[in-house]
Image 1 (cartoon, rainbow, N blue to C red):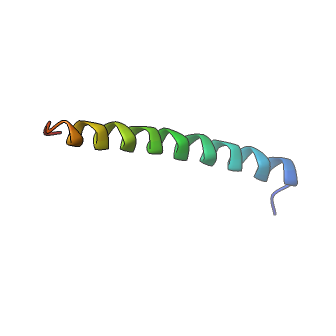
Image 2 (spheres, rainbow, N blue to C red):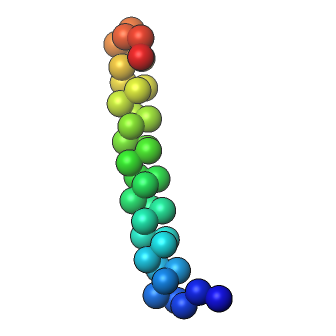
Length: 38
């Protein structure tokens, strides 16, 4: 079983990666609004 600290560390990594994904998704959406093809 994981310690609380271990879970907090993993959760932090997950949140960071989700934020990166959301940022990339926003870029793709903005490009699509401009009529560009990705």
